[in-house]
Every structure is written in structure tokens, then in C-alpha cells.
Amino acid sequence: MALLFISCDTDNCDLSEYPSSPLSEPYAVQYGDDWVEYTYVCVDGYNEIYTYYIVDGCWEMYLDTQYNVLCN
Image (cartoon, rainbow, N blue to C red; front, side, top):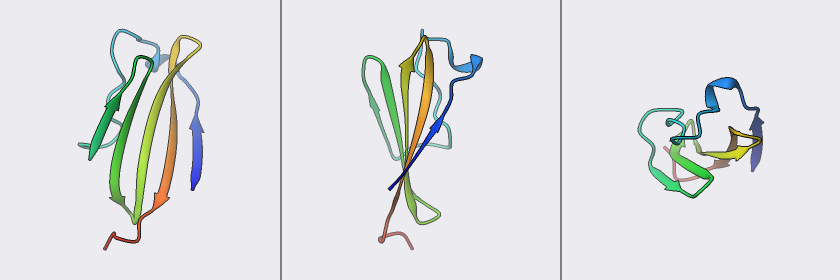
């Protein structure tokens, strides 16, 4: 399991709505009060989970990749 932190830039400081999906249509989306999670399955053999949290007034993105043995 790998965890990648991508820092906030000024484009992600509009807290009136959730950030857009970082790739095409996600497999699943989950929403919380101060977070949103986009899940993609079988991206180059991995599942990728992009989670945005509100930190210091901006959305910050964290990427979690998990190897998926079921991907062809």
C-alpha cells in the first residue's frame, strides 16, 4: 500500500462544493462533511483511491494505491 500526499493549491480552496473527480468516471464515490473519496478500479493493475480533506481552508488530496490481483 502506498500513500501519496499532494499539497493544496489555490484552485482547491473553494469550499462551497466538493472537488471534481481527478480522472474519468469513478467506480465509487463517498461523501462526508469535510471529505470526499473517489475510487477507481484496475488502473494499470491497481485500485486508486483519491481522498480530499479540508485542511487549513483548502481541499488537500491524498492518493492511496492498492495492487489488485483481479485486474487483467
